[in-house]
Length: 107
Image (cartoon, rainbow, N blue to C red; front, side, top):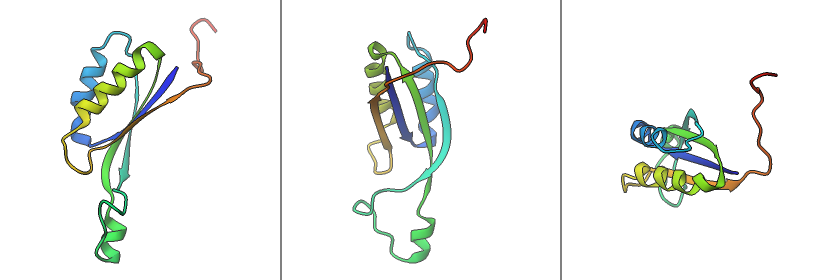
């Protein structure tokens, strides 16, 4: 199993979620509204007001997927999330040691 996480621009969510939903084996996802900022080396605030307000709205996507689907999900998010501008966000994938549903039908 793999866990795919992404921080994207809010305006990219509809296109990404539609593409993912149409993929065979799509396991579902969690979407959270978050705020973020670039690393200091990419953007240096000019004063304390800018430092405190220098967070822009972002969307975080969390997906846990079977290994054979994970790379395709990852690449889809990476490609559709890009506007080729600073602030597009990030996407990463890690190994999941254990995974199970909390609720099982028939329990």
